[in-house]
Length: 183
Image 1 (cartoon, one colour):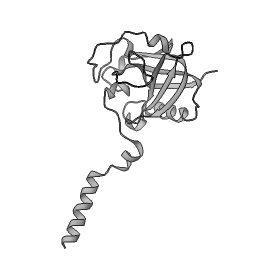
Image 2 (spheres, rainbow, N blue to C red; image 1 turned 180 degrees about the vertical axis):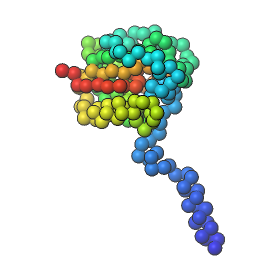
Image 3 (cartoon, rainbow, N blue to C red; image 1 turned 135 degrees about the vertical axis):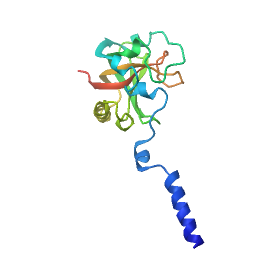
Image 4 (cartoon, rainbow, N blue to C red; image 1 turned 60 degrees about the vertical axis):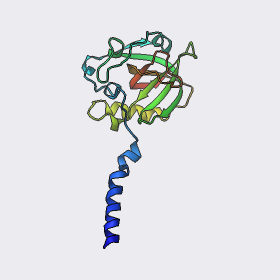
């Protein structure tokens, strides 16, 4: 009897302590400014979805904003804009928060770099952009490094935290809404 009670308690403990199948297959979702990163923040309706042509180098010259950054609001005007740029895709990496992290280099000044990120659709539920994220993630998986791409994404200031390849001012395209291989 004691042995079966012990097994039952062990089974209950394992049920509550082990990660779920979804967590094992999908990873963890984000935390820092997460609503802004998935375009589900309190200001998302204010984002002008008409893209502005720019470059990695130009975005990197925007003055850095004062911290603290708001958790669920955007930093006007840069985070209320969608940007379109051509860049060289240097690397794609899956982050701990399940985002796909794209390292981009400016075409004319290759030492100028920035990050763009594509959220995991399962981490962006109810954002209305899950399908865009799914399509972009599937497409980027077949693009080899050193390919020139055109990318469209929402401006986002990330905290400066020693990310390799991050713009000095922390500007990113996050979330990426779409991209294609440049002709």
